[in-house]
Image (cartoon, rainbow, N blue to C red; front, side, top):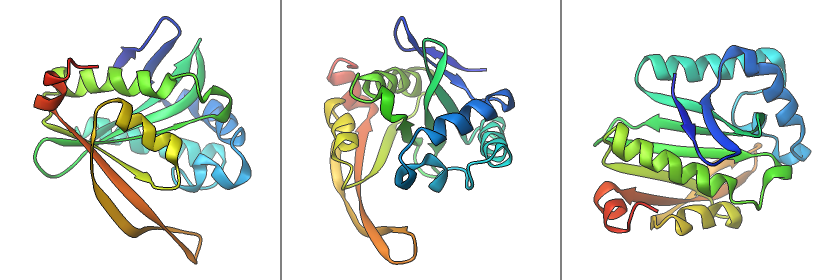
Length: 183
């Protein structure tokens, strides 16, 4: 089981079934319109959380990705998911952090620790982050970490039945990461 130490108080550990109740409680801390269940694991229930966690465990078993819980002082504060793409030793990275933990550098530090893991341990070549353009605070994270903005996919994300969002694509290559001093 993979565990990454981010700081004295923050660590990333793979989510397991025993985390389901805490994940549901965490999800309920989001404003109604921003609940992580809307795009991650369906209805905010124990069954939905268990299905999401099992999907993450299956990804890990199949070498297709890792689903981490972001823990701050032992409490679940968010999630960070890696998904191996089908092309060119590439990994996609997604994250979500509960509102009460935002603005403290937790996601930036967690992503930096994860980049070290991706490039040094997994020997991947490329990391991508796809983020909705309206989420400027989230877009600032790959920018702080030295990712390159590669483009915008217009109207890629469908929200509800009638509103489309644009998705910005950021990427970091291993040689760029090494040249920048690894953050």
